Length: 459
Image (cartoon, rainbow, N blue to C red; front, side):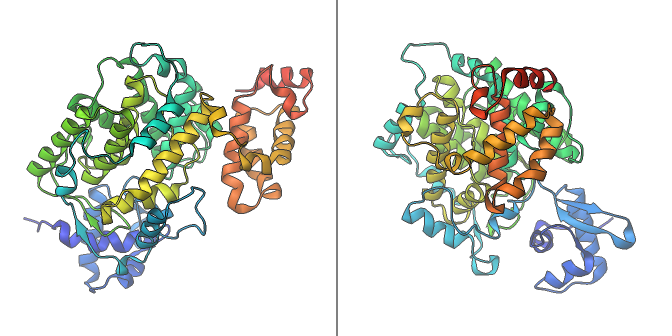
């Protein structure tokens, strides 16, 4: 009978592979291990991690290489912090950022602290101050009239499907562009050169968001909703298909982190139920949203896909109260990842709170409900106004379809925009192209005949 390899034996190997940007050979991985082990032992542990779905094996036996699967890693954005965050961080958040971006060897390993959850008392404890909750409500309110849950969501459903699917997937390292996402979700056409897992991830988001809209009067902070969201978001992405929607019964590792999640299935179940009970009892929509966005990934109740579940679950209060959704538009991946690490490793929420508030402000601006509340024009858009006009105009005049536009933007952006801003600029240009209509194309110096000809082939 083959020897069962424990999670403690697998963790050092997984963390060694996590330290590489891209794939690594057995020899390269062996050099990263603090405690040397025989080659055959290392190969068996790598094979076990592949079987668990934590690593991907690339190539044939002679030249086989290993890499962390995109769904398992906390993403490479946490390894090398950006020189400056796009988000205006508080002093406390900046300190957290400094701590979680230190080398793994300089960070103290920690486990799950149940008192972080048990110490929270709904409507007495406040992660968000009263003034902050009021500010978010003013931004997010869409109507003063009492309407059935989900009314506002259904009005903006087409746009939200693309926005939230793309942005949530982007935070997981998905490389689809905004226009490619739109083409996939609207026409069912996958983008060439993308991994099957990336396509599946986006389609799963679409299905999960549709659940929130179609069952808006039934969904809530209960097992049915959260487990259903997980089943939909993890569909065809887990090694064990039966794990979708089920609480995990084994240990998991977090790549590029010193945090070790709870392992005992009984305690996972108890904590999961406590999260749902407390979330349901919270009266303020934004406190509810932030609470689940933080505590669900901290517990890691499922085998994988926990952060994606938390981002959609954070929208449950928005659906129920007809508030603007939280679509994570423009949220820098490095800030989101490092803020989550601050919760995992330090149990400190200031960084994630800064990200949450900034993200909601951007989401509200995206849906134009409170544009006047933000006051100043977007400085990024102002800075690149002329390149934006030029590139959108060129795409329309050349009568490009969505695939051709994606290729053109990727080729032309480096000529007009510094490398640090290229991804954000391309996303902005794709958004403008998706929003172009008869009443606004004049902003890009276009003639009616040019717009009409382009519109016919824009698919």
